[in-house]
Image 1 (tube, helix red, strand yellow):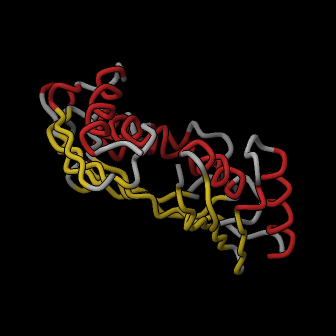
Image 2 (spheres, rainbow, N blue to C red):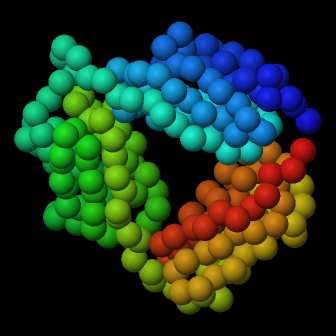
Length: 217
């Protein structure tokens, strides 16, 4: 078990290793395994990458962020310009039907709403919007249309877990209520947790995944 001091050093080192992050401007505090990132970044994408880098570190139980996005120079855009850029990106997403996603921008913060058939479509949308100039944050209010029965969803997820590298998929319990999936049980790393949640999201008909898994070391 890492001490808070060791965890702080490891998170700081991971931030320095991540080339898309200006680590010198990000402070790291750790208390009881909970990591807090604070400071200023040049874009929402940099903020997102810093958070992902911290989560990669073994021993991180939870994370909070106080990172502020401060746009300067060529990175600044009006809300109208940001909205137009988002609409342009959505128009090039061939798997979406026209008008499927609604866009609202306020202070550079983009709110996306609407419905898609698959979680991969949702991920494609948010990953395309995240790096756009002028974006200070992204709120994902996109839903996924249910298409199969709860029993079929549960069977698909359990089969997917068996196919993954998780050593003991039986330690992960799957509960399905409508199109909502709850995962509970224990995992040994953030990688196993990510594999389990991706297996759930990759199942047709899933519109929400609740992660109640416990990370053990």
